[in-house]
Amino acid sequence: MRNPNGYGSVYKMKDKKRRKPWRALKTMEFDIITGKQTRRTIGYYETRKEALEALVKYNVNPYNLEAKKITFKEVYQEWSEQHFKNISERTIAGYKMSYKALNVLEDKIFSEIKPLHLQKAMDSVTMAESSKRIVKSFLKSLYNYALKYEVVDKDYSNLISLGKKEAIITRKPYTDEEILKLWKFKELPWVDTILIMIYSGLRIGELLTIKNQDIDLENRTIRGGIKTDAGKNRLIPINMKILPFIKARMSPSNEYLIVNDSKGKENTQLTYDKYRYFFNKVVKIIDMEHTIHDCRHTFATLLSNANANETTIAKIIGHSNYDMTEKVYTHKDIEELKKAIDLI
Image 1 (tube, rainbow, N blue to C red):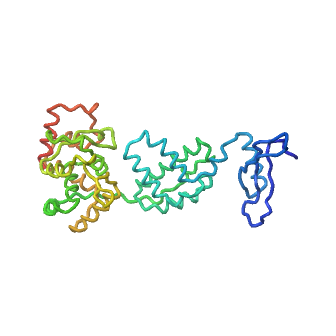
Image 2 (image 1 turned 135 degrees about the vertical axis):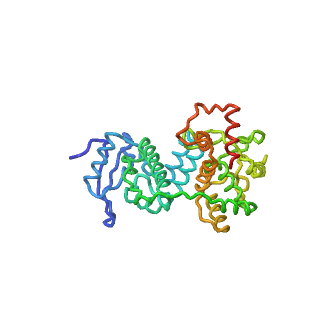
Image 3 (image 1 turned 90 degrees about the vertical axis):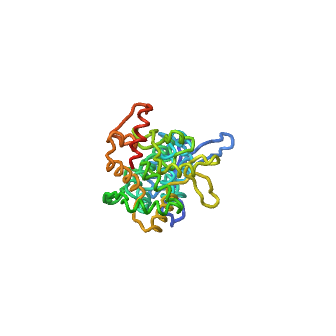
């Protein structure tokens, strides 16, 4: 049966080696004087039936054919231009990390990416399960964008498996002897940041986002924090022991307290991956086995051992079991926080 004028057509290409020989074409323009047609390819298919179905689908609901040709990288670039305007720096860093982890997909046509491609890409990601969940969330967001702008017809991100669930990591606080050893080697690069975390309870993600403008040396406080409602924008007292480290790192030429000192990237904000590299390097030099998060665990342990008030500990750490409406701190609150932190 002949298709109506302007509907489009389907035919089999002569190249017998093609895996998808059936071509679906749509007539976009028709010049009634010359009789010439302007046609665009909708796609190539393995069977005539698939090609006809694609043609019918296009005529029922026309979509942007150019969108079907853009790569994973191009979708990410367009998506990030819109999405990054309304999210935190930490979330942006997580999405950038996710994109980097999936670089095997970078040059693939987004509409041609199948579940198998996504699963292989995820299987190649050598990260903890929590980080893999961020990668999967990133993919979900990309697919939502791609569906909205008719780049794809289906969301395959939900089909991805994160693999075998990892064992829960046991946190190990620094011993008193190890803390003394850190003080002994305080002049080594990055040891000061370990001690800052041990005596402040700051997460590494929080420490790396602290700006100099967030620090009040006179009152010995830092305004910062991320992750939970209780943890965001909280007031963190500066222990007297680490005050010299904070002062030494503050510089009028730097926006952030912790900056990169690598050649060519001096005074720029330090990334988590780069810090982890420095951290692992220095703990190996001083012969210790610890994770970055052990610093925060050590802080909580030190406060608890010093018999600090549980509510005060929750305030400083920013645990979800404590919430201060609009983070209103009185002078008494601040003094109590400093009193507690100076116990360690």
